[in-house]
Amino acid sequence: MKIYNHLYQIVITSLTFPNIAWLQILRQKYVILALLLSLNFIAATPAMAANLSGDLLKQPATEITISLGNLANELKFEPNHLEFEAGKRYQLRLTNPSQLKHYFTAKDFADGIWTQKVQAGKVEIKGAIHELELKPGAEAEWVFVPLKSGTYGLRCSIPGHTEAGMTGEIAISN
Ligand SMILES: [Cu+2]
Image (cartoon, rainbow, N blue to C red; front, top):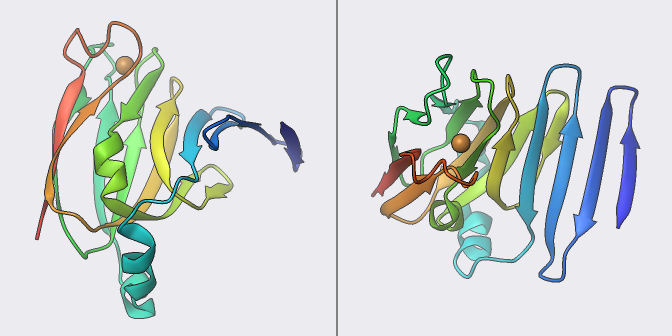
């Protein structure tokens, strides 16, 4: 277990789990966001990521926003369907305007993309991301390139939220 103190506003706590998953908790004035990181390498990704040209990473990213919950505290993603094209660069902006904590859980989708970075406040996180937790009022930007086409499930893994309909679908086309 390691504890890093970053600047005066940010505290990152990393816990190392037996399966090499990391839990990082980021704190900033109004934004508290937790990211579950995994350093497990994905079979296809390192080789494919290595082939991503520098030019692609300089391309402006297509911006898409998804809201986790809403001001009325309804348990849903808005929108609940996202579409991406493999090989393009995206900046997915995640917001939580509700008063409840929510998760963006889409493990198979996360396995099918190459993450350039996740940005939250003044912190940038590099490496594979499998799940994001957004506290009320939190915002994060996930910059990635989809690699593997398919239709993937999205859900909020807070107990009761999936059951209440906080689910979605993410499609990656070729
Ligand atoms: Cu939720």
